[in-house]
Amino acid sequence: MEMKKRRCNDVLNLVSIKRIILKSMTIEMRHKMENTISILENLKRETQKDESEIISMAFKTGLKHLWRELILGKYLRGKVSRDEAIETVGIDWVELAERQKKAMMEDLESALKK
Image (cartoon, rainbow, N blue to C red; front, side, top):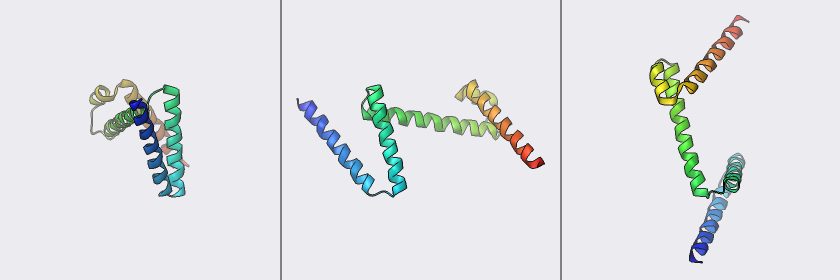
């Protein structure tokens, strides 16, 4: 019973914090935050995981994404070898980055000819 009461208080505190934050934001910021909260609530419902676990997973996923983008950017600029990029992020990501760069260069070349 005590655990349930504490969890209820935690939820009430979280709701209060969300309301305070939303009041201090611009309309655009508020819309983005409400969208984020909506996504978080949908993930909670769909995955049956608590908010802190979902936020932790999102943080880890975001860090992995940022790290992958950093390595691929370095590879495409010639600061990291292809082998090192493959070892770090995997062959699929490296090949995708190569295809995207090739397509972009073809688009750029085509635009410059016009």
